[in-house]
Amino acid sequence: MGLSTHVLDTMHGTPAPGMRVSLYATDGGSARLIKQFVLNQDGRSPDGLLVDHDSLTKGTYRLVFEVADYFQARGVVLPEPNFLDLVSLDFGVAKPDQHYHVPLLVSPWSYSTYRGS
Image (tube, rainbow, N blue to C red; front, side):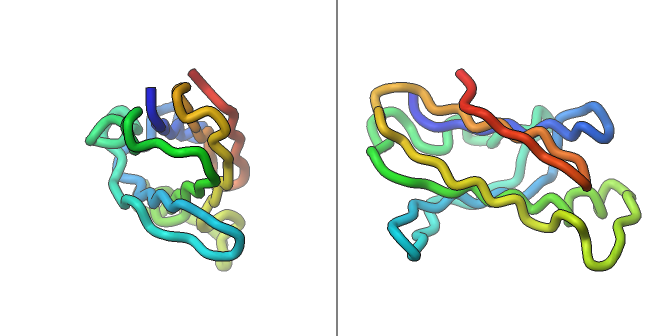
C-alpha cells in the first residue's frame, strides 16, 4: 500500500536511472514539497514507497519529472527550447487505504501515465 512511481525511457527501451523527481502535496494553487529523489537503476525511488501506507492521506498530489535533463545526460541532442522539459502529473488519492502506483512512460517527445497496481 502507499504511493509509488516507476519511469520507463521509451526512446532507449530501458528504465530511467538518474532522473530527478519531486513529489508535492497540492491544495488549489499551492504546492508543498514532500520529497525529492533520483531514480535508481530500475527507474524507481531508491527508498521504495514515496509515501507509506500510514502516511498517505486523501488529497491531491503532483509528481514532477525532470525529463529534459535526463535525456541530455544520456547524450540525446534536444532542440532549444526542449519539447518536453518537466513532466508534471497532478493526480488525486481518493482511497488512501489502497496502493497508488503512478508510472511514467517517456521519450523526449511524448509521455503517458496511468494508475498502476
